[in-house]
Image (cartoon, rainbow, N blue to C red):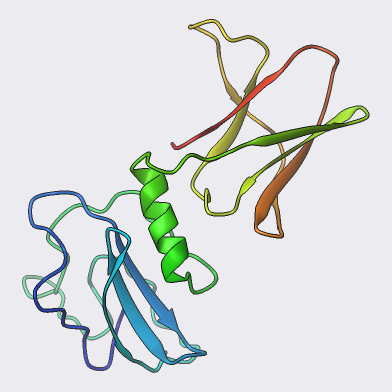
Length: 175
């Protein structure tokens, strides 16, 4: 996140030579900027978010005040499983996402039948997961993405699907 004065954390909370979850949260309501590493708050400071502007959205460097070319202030590493949210995540949200990614926090999928439809719901913290279905469970079975867009309500994603009478299996996968 572009800052007017940086966010220096000493000692550096991002481990060298290994994957890490890094979350940066800018929150206009509290006027704060927070850095979390592997689910833990590493540092914070007061910060004013810039107002609406025409600057390009960049990830990994190449910011509006960076030089182009050799001094471009680019991130030296790899970025994987990037997510941008439309709200400021709490520390608990970030910790939960970290534990889910490590496989240490199970995600429950709730399935409820309502007449000729089935309502599937799962925690909103499983934002990167995809819902799939299959009509059998043999080893070579093909799983397909359940059609429709999940609706977020009350901390849960919900999707309603028609039931054709055949038995159906559902799963959430971390792509």
